[in-house]
Image 1 (cartoon, rainbow, N blue to C red):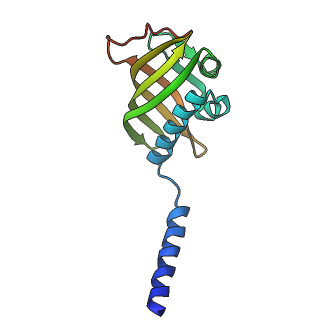
Image 2 (image 1 turned 180 degrees about the vertical axis):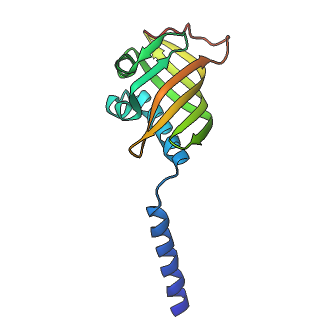
Image 3 (image 1 turned 30 degrees about the vertical axis):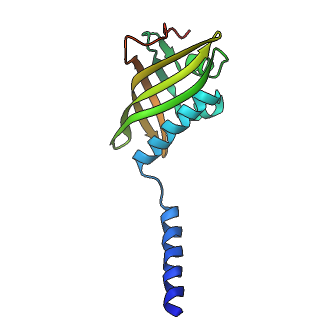
Length: 154
């Protein structure tokens, strides 16, 4: 009985200690990537604001360059309704206080009553400032020329 109680106590303590461990830089960034996809789908400007740095720039799939304010206004607007936003092939390379991420986004959305499906390959630069990771630059590139969206985001 004492041994069983001791074993249970050790498992409980180990889980408490493990739960208190901070996330690694890579896991923090991966969580932010998931948060970003959720924020885009939900048009959550407050969450987007927490993820993108003040000097953020974004290169759209059509080559258009957007600053932070333009990006936030566009992504929190009612221009498109994202039905699904899947992340795949995520890679994170951390170099002290900066990181490069890349991945594939599989998106289905509605614009002006039409449904579009497309895949975007992207790369991002993240910087860690005061213990918080924020993205400072991102570029999205169409994967397939056979996609069904004449992609222009304005």
